[in-house]
Length: 65
Image 1 (cartoon, rainbow, N blue to C red):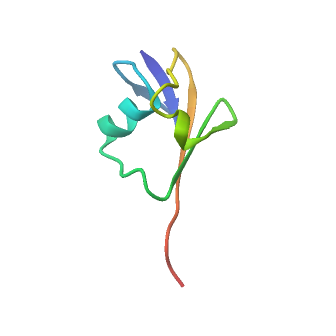
Image 2: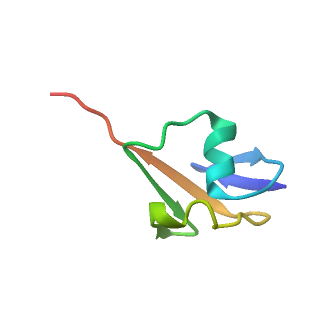
């Protein structure tokens, strides 16, 4: 399926937010995710299914100073 990931078209075989993070090899700590402009609580990542053309934004915290 085709999703929009951080404003870029991205081909993904489908599944949940958790599956997407595993596919992207992203660590869950320090990440927030929104689908179609709605923040998804981390407790729902394993059960939240992605659909064709879902708009997904992954926000990563960055330490610095």
